[in-house]
Image (cartoon, rainbow, N blue to C red; front, side, top):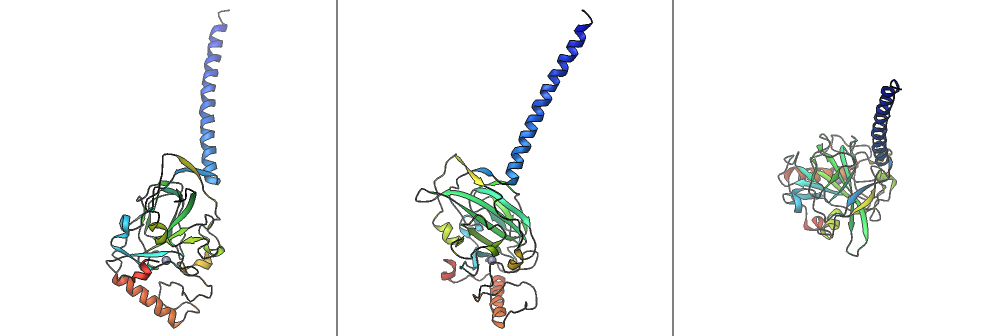
Length: 284
Ligand SMILES: [Zn+2]
């Protein structure tokens, strides 16, 4: 039947078109599913870090000093400051301490400001695979976004003071516990959960790596929530340990003592002058 030929041709063409549509749709659905998996938890494939460097003045923190070191139940990270004094370090680059994946990049205001967390997987000297999170706080700008893969020495942001709340400096932490996120108040503030950043870096400057990728969990900590306990603390806490809250503004916060004011006056003067800390503090 001559009349049927055009019809079957049209039908065939329609079917081919449908197949392509189906394939395109299936691919799109797969991509969306994979994206959703990455968003909702699960893992991202990351190569082992091949070592860790300092997050300022890379790789050895040249031109910077620790205005405050790490101590358990007190300051849970290190405050890095430029030796130029004042806020001459505003906007200087902050580098990823090692290869990893960005697991948090937000401005959460209050005591933290712009904050970035990078998760690192690496092989310890004893051969075991381990993971840590590095935190970069009070940034002037964030230069990476959630789930970006970063290399050691890659710029993740620039140094700031949380929009004038603090003298410009970097608050830098290295966490053993991958569930802390921005909710430090819910976790023990000691070496069960945190490393001394300098001590951590010093013994891991060079580590074995390869092209192999490993599954690194993402989105496995609570959203920023019970953070009011951390507001303005900049690493300090109310544990009975005599470490005052860091206040950048004028006027004493409720309950602060004259001694606390002296502490912060000295620290701010030190940051303004670019004065170095004692050897003992540098080596904490
Ligand atoms: Zn700090």
